[in-house]
Length: 594
Image 1 (cartoon, one colour):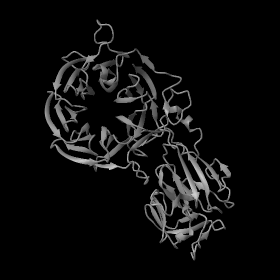
Image 2 (image 1 turned 30 degrees about the vertical axis):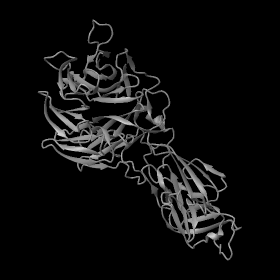
Image 3 (image 1 turned 180 degrees about the vertical axis):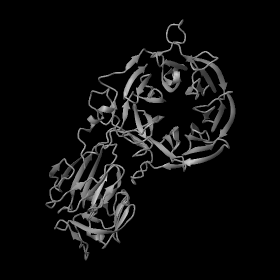
Image 4 (image 1 turned 135 degrees about the horizontal axis):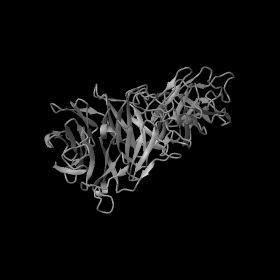
């Protein structure tokens, strides 16, 4: 297998604005800084909308300033925040009142609607592309009732959620009149409508399902996704729904052809996570996704083969790029596809003697001459560095039990009970052995014959005949009279390699030439690797197999909007009270409006 060496250097062609070294992600730092525009009055920005003119190459950005109850306007071509009243000192913005939660632009770009849940109204803002009204002003206020939250535009209609009432309001954009109200129950949060405007999917922050609405008949069905959801987006080809989970840091995926959830991690049977996860090297854990912008490509993406890309903001300041299709559907785009993950290994014997470090085929002490060790059997998509321990005939569980304790007792009949353990989850199977360490004190006539491990009768061993959650049955039955009040025990694998790691629960078992794999790691114990002694162990550190295409654009990223003609993203950074303009074709952050 090709090893990964200096792989971070290979991402340079994707991010020419970098001079410093990079680890796993592309950082917005170093030699070419973006142009920073003059200070503004954008306080606590969250939502953003764009209205373009002149064929999509000019226009305005509209950004909610939550604390001020305003919508700030950014002139894209002139790279300036617009002062709407030149006679008053300071920058003036569009007054919409406190309580605005969302913005959306009509499909023809003529108006922007601001949702004010406190006032219960929509503020209709005239753009530079409209006629018959003054640009950048509120031309109408539409009363809908308090509690409205998010807005989605589709064709000549707008869909506004009201979580408190469990409804979605449908508005005719030509008349600004309510067409109907869809009763869904629960707490609907966000709507995505397909291109033909026949189906709408609605997230729910109170239920673990998405609502699917047939718009011409208003028939509602439910799609089980196993978690409460917030932001939602449809891929441009309408093939998949992406919904942000409110329970785990992941994006849940639904295939619209069958209206069933896609288990993105189906290759890993040990995980309960079904969604797209974003490992953050800055946090050392998974980052929380917030907003999604979709992009259709005229030719498939080079690295992923996907004709659609999803840009996802996360609350650690990154924008990740996900490929809904291509060679690895619903995976974060790998910025370096030239090689697989790098592996280092440290092997040591029962005495802890270091045998070898590095390479992917180590030969630890105690192995027969000529063994070939471990080989990777595939190129896993590892997003998070992992450490694996492989042990031959090693201890799986160890503890100390007391004969007279109600919590853990060695009972007559050969049953070892330990309520502090879960033997099944620990990977214990029939055929493993229980080894007792104790000073043997036979009662009169007690037969304490067992497998003498240490040669002096202080370590005795019996095979396991059956396994339950907190107890195992031994055969033949060791009499309890052979043991003192407190007895230390180990449950040991026998004749197998056991694999332990943060993504391998319960412990996996390996035999020679039988591949082990999950979604992150794959290996084979090659023939002849059984050691000549117990407790032979290999510890593997597997570095990331994916250099994610992810851009550090701020600190606390919220809203995101994609400008197709310009091939630019506009991303709201709440923490720095700014909007970042990012060129997706060059990997450059061009301007920061703050």
